[in-house]
Image (cartoon, rainbow, N blue to C red; front, side, top):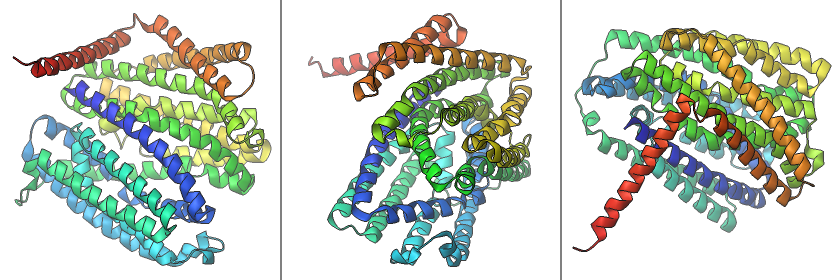
Length: 519
């Protein structure tokens, strides 16, 4: 059952992302043609300003999901109801806090903008964004429940329908009217309807949560939640210092133009991450239930499977990016939009380091281990800032990315595995770093090998050359990994899962065919 839920989450997530990526590119093009870069800028600015308020959430969502795993696994309805009632109240208070902060920020909005007078109706625009931000808190407790129960695919389907409908109607409005207020108003209306419909889906799936009877949470769980939320607040601040400051540093010490060049690279890497994250997230959705119900050995065996899958995916991503990203940018925008080679290499290194810590971070978060490293993200953030500020003066742009690499390797790279291996697996962490080193070595060697093959058999940087390079990047690494891992226990487990799913799917088709045959 756990595997089936994971596969459903993976399929729906990947399919949804492919559709949204395609429509997103189309919508962005029409947006620019209809309203221009100024409105695109205000759209991005207000999104970023209000996203800072996510710090107010302070990890409540993660804490909610963690605390729901065990009572859901044990069908402890009273505790589930008590938690949901508590979270609903907490998110209601958060919505009011967000509104208050938004009102306080508004008078200072012009300080963040230059030549803001050309944007009419800025007040209406701003508070349409604020209202949408508040709506996201209305049913947040229900999203936590359905995700903790590994059934996020139920609302993912509806989310996809609403997102497609919203984008299509927004495109129609832009083409016919070019009215930004109407554009935002329609988006807000559909977002509200989406929340209402999804809320009813959750109520139908878990009818017992609709009771008016009040349930109280035990003091131990409440104390644990408060402790975790405080720890996650530090994690959020640290994360902002690491991932939210690179563009500021580039703009301050290099140039705004360099930020634009860098954004071409990040746009592609972020889209690639968005495509692979549903696969890893689909696996991760089952980890909380696994930890709550299985032994340490079982947890460790599944971790090794997820680690292998994660390596395989991110290794392929690095090989593709190293060989295809810059030729694609050259074909798309021209050579003048390329960064220097060393900067490109460290962008890939940071992408790999961040991606490869996904399995260990998943097990850490799903096990509720938030307090054990609560100061690590802050330390990582300060190391990132200090090292980037020092290195940018001597090395230029690449110094900022080297600073990010240094901050990662000196903190979370080794702290998170130690915590998980000690508290979840009850094993020595040396094995983790040995496997990590082996995976990294394979990625490096095969990436160079594939690059060499591409240079030999492919000429030019045209579209057909990109296709051939893509085939080479897909075929050679997968053949090598299949040869290396086909006797591996983790690979055998994956193969058995795939075979079982295929046979189950095949069996369902036979049943449907038989049902249609007239007697």
